[in-house]
Length: 78
Picture (cartoon, rainbow, N blue to C red):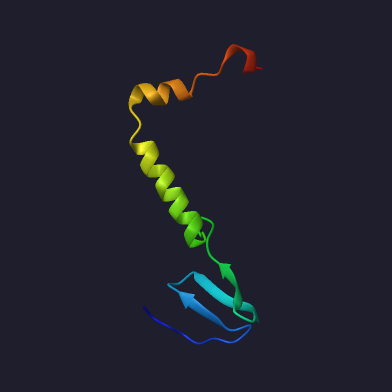
């Protein structure tokens, strides 16, 4: 792991097109600004892990279980 020291309003660049800027530091909290192309997903780690778990669960579904998810009850159709 690369560890860098930065102060408020200083940045680091990842690759050619991702810039991370220190926006604010208060106590033990640091606010980061992330400038990345729209096609690069940016998530907090806990959100990324939740998405990964959901994708793993979805991959375990059998085809008949997936088909039943697409069925909308008649009383909920518009």
